Length: 178
Image (cartoon, rainbow, N blue to C red; front, top):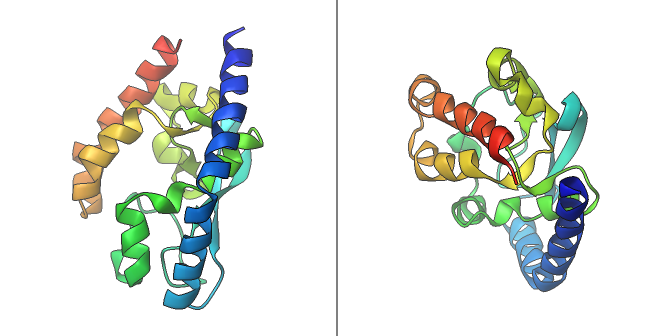
């Protein structure tokens, strides 16, 4: 029953949010096109529930780099264009993930989906249980990362100070979801 109620909530909340936020989608799309040539959306390869790979939608905030990968846990800030800085700081770049929620690949609340290149770091050993959950737009670990992780640019420092707590919060969420 929990899964059914959660799915109904996800469909209603994401559908309503997509309608209400459609003007922001239009303005953001225009801002990206004016700021940097290239596509409006970035399709991030993510690992979702039961390790199924899917394309997570985001507004593009970085210049195109065909050699880039997502093995780093922190952003390559040198590639973020000016308008991209704004949509990142306001989290507008994350709004297209409402589409992923609406079609059932993600949920409103849950652990953030892992990048394919980060699966060994974030879904291994005692944290493998996280793979059983539907990933979410937000959740306890995402809020923790927003408060603490966004301030850290050094990869090693992030792995030491933020990542262990994030992963423990995802396991806690799994054990206490209701």
